[in-house]
Image (cartoon, rainbow over all chains, first blue to last red; front, side, top):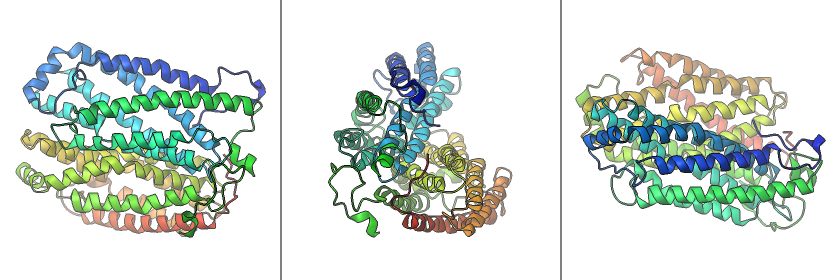
Length: 257
Length: 252
């Protein structure tokens, strides 16, 4: 379930261990996701919840090719970010926290959160499959897609709380992640929290096309992923230097005792 | 909760987990359990009116009346759930961690995480999402609102397999465990949970009577056993953390 640590027999020959590969997978597929994001006609500007059923249907008829193209890319690439989250889990488990419980909590939340993204994508694709369907049905699918995509931020909030807490509890002279990562992750969780309102309001900054629920949520999470890429990369580099012929998990805790 | 409170150690002190910090992460996660299930009860019982569930026999116009009457509280409750649902993952991780301490670790522990990570969506979030969609546009085609109503309640009461697998994994782990992390009787209660899931299977067939989704067996019997089980689980996890030596090394 977790990516294996660098193979002891290979000493400190770096580059192609599971962790680095997972990080670079996230970069590659992150670029694909960015392309899909830009291609989806429903994001520039984000579709308004105030659109009528016939307007929504017209949108799907007019843009069906681009909707399908972009959403198929999302479909193929979205879950490819999970190995990246598993690197976070593995690094959390190396921390000198009292126990490793937070890593398991993080893993559980990451799995459920990713599934939600996959489901939202499917709703969009189903709506685009037959744009000649009854407009009321297209609107229902469109509502389901947008609400599932925007509102259930609870999994990300839980992930970031667990990560932040683990970083703060990592009691070793040089913690695995610097302390500011904790506050950064709490901050991102806080900024994303108001998006839950997207499931209940139809206009203003909290609506699913609003400044807070759409732009702030997506930009802050994208920033979080970019920052975590660099944080993880330096943690992995240091791990290679410090434990070349690995004395792996429960790592720091075991060493500490 | 004496263990959880003191936090005197400097973060930069070398080597040992700071004094007063032993098991601090476990205690924080433990507190999530009562907090999450309080939210859960508040949301599903008082705000969203999903528990006890309205009848499967409502006509389309009665369903519209139900959403009209409870629209505001459904919105408040389920929007709140969207934010706090992740706490469920934290309690999931904590129980799994305790299972890793068992002599049967770690396969059942991973199974516990996986089954609940799956179950969270059809068994809990779908209900919220479909109720939210139903009240999002009260002027939607009434038959689609009725479809959302059925989808929400059937997924909520009827996501049997996710939880069946979860209780099987848990029950087997507790009964086979030689380290006595949890008492055997909690394993026997797990058997009751398994039976409960099986007894709820007819919700897909009956619209009235004891096996309907609001029936005496499919809903009330199941819910009573669930609440008793959950209370015992929360208390036993607390006890297990208390009994756990602070320097215990849980193998990976």
